[in-house]
Image (cartoon, rainbow, N blue to C red; front, side, top):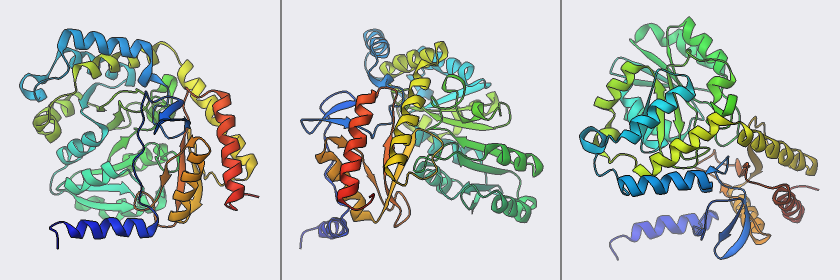
Length: 393
């Protein structure tokens, strides 16, 4: 028996469940239409909300950064990886987010893995929404504080935990996504802030899918709800609407000082490459100059949602461009995704364990780069496959 035969058994289990997949290969830029496995298909599965990942202005700044700084930072930030571009980006993001300070990480994932364990201690309590992103869940697991979970967006359940536990702990921090990535719904941030003020708790919001999408010029969920100064930690990503790579925490200056000493990804992993920093700076400047990209995104999202609703699909209760197309059973979800690809539309199937068992869905990610003809083509494909699989009439 070969040494890693137990892995074969695990992989065979995926195949029997109908959820095994071979990763497709994209042979070009991430755009509205992509060359996937050497076939042109409409792309409805990208986080490139504003189309900036391949924008000429953004690419040019990446090229200029390479010419001046090379391709890598060459060090962790705390040694010689703290390039002036990184300082420029953090100052620009703080201005954009209207917060005191920003700390940039190598990704949104490392942002949560590094920040959450650093800002709590033994004797503190983390209260987390049940549908928070996996990176939050992992960050919470790494923390030495106690943990509690409240039912998704259930403010009665959140207050129950606060009533029962607040007096037992030093610091209590409520953590929630700003936009929940699998369903597209918004956190009830005004209610969360009200409870936090009532019970003397801190608030931490991961706004990965709100940054660049909600609020004035894409300032995010906090701006959308008018809660500037009310949220203690605002996490964002630089790899979705911004179109490059990385993550950040917008917070107070003293928190930035602490994270630069105690956030492990900043201490033990090489800093963001300069070419990425140059590109990110330009993307943020473009958002600050105009809201044309966010307006186009929302116009496309409304158009597609209306079309899917008219066809009779269950698209959940999304409040954002994220549009879940609910299928249910895991194997059927993956079969639907494959059938759509055969029709020339790529939409990734999302199944357990990413979402609860039996709640499989196709997660459509609308972008500003989509043209109406792309969306019409996709709607026709959804109609054809949906009727063939008896999901719609």
